[in-house]
Length: 376
Image 1: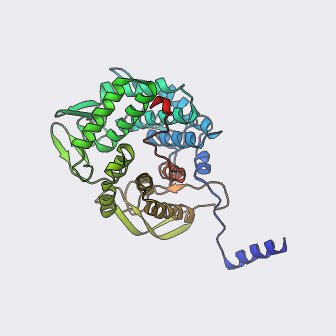
Image 2: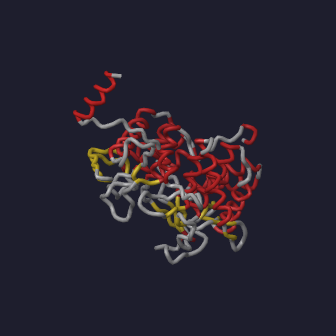
Image 3: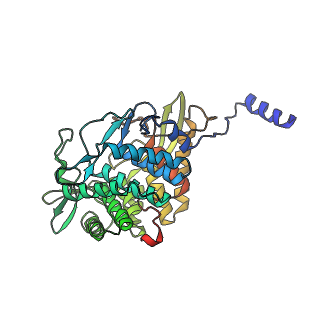
């Protein structure tokens, strides 16, 4: 006991930082609204992006136990708030507020696909099928509202309508990320439900992604009707492409590191500061550090077996989070969304950064849920 006292006293006198006891799950639990069960996407505001609700479902389902109830709570809210599509199926808005009020009228294919992905992941981990029908309704909405032909192939466009909030007509734009999301959703729920028509759509989306949206070395930015290709270089298109389509596309990671790696970044948060951070940014023309995207690369590195790089960048994200943690002695550790040298992005702790960090702690792939062998 006397040795323990002296050790603590020495640590205090020398200014040694206490060991951080926080966990990503602890931070996610703190973000839950007790009434609606939604998870606030950021530490400093009540916005609940649909995509981050899907991420939270995946994280809580992966954790299991009592946390699976948190996943169930989010999905139960979404079951009550789904809206019928004009030509069939159902969908959700792009965002809600933590109190359950609407966050706007806009919606996107990718965010809806992530909910379907989350439903598949939840069912695969828990065996609970109560939300499968809701997931299939989402596939029907994408099928009848967002599936378009591009030459001899077909993919999903970014939205079902030309919403005024968008800078472009999203009914004409094919995003690589949205098509990867939709591919995973149709594949996973098609396998679970043994629905050949959904697996056929998944096969078409894979063909579109690998033949048109991939140039032989990396994934393009996307495409636009009637026949224009977007050659911009986006980080998520590369990392998510590997996660969704497999290790055959690992060459994309080399180009991503060459194009989007940033280093020497600093950040202030919660009265603390950290310097010398290394990670990835969003696309070829941005310079801020983006932990969500960095952890997407970490997941892809783990998948292709490059543990050295995965561990290296994952450790950088942990350093980012722990150095800026407001209370290292509590049970919560949130990951900031981005460094401050950008415009329009949150710089506080975020669900997106935190969930991707947690999934890499478990080394799981949200694009490929652990489907029962009998269902594959």
